[in-house]
Length: 157
Image (cartoon, rainbow, N blue to C red; front, side, top):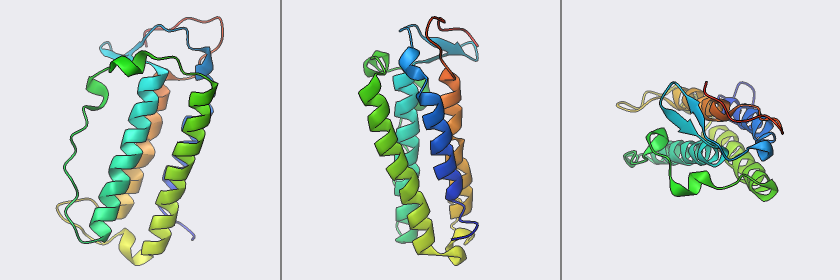
């Protein structure tokens, strides 16, 4: 469907996957951004996935006329023990499958809802268009890890 705002999400997934393809080179040291945020490939992958799932659930609730569940994620403010795990070939394969399916789910759901639903006010929530534009910001998480190359160490950015 032309101009489907959810295509922004699918495009953002593609960008995240392009960056994630380089994360196999991660040397195990954290990447520090903004002077206080620690990042690892697994943490970025978790945040991308959580964000995609959270807002897709919000879209589904809004379209069903229900109140979306409140956001209870800890987000980027915490680094979980599992965030320190290696990001290996199978992790990349899983990300490709999971993120691509989630991105396509946005596109299909928005297509099914139709253009008349995209800009319908849903106070106090955002419109579906604004949600899609917000979710497309998942590239920020991937950019915190960025492009990694074998032989280069992690950095402070």
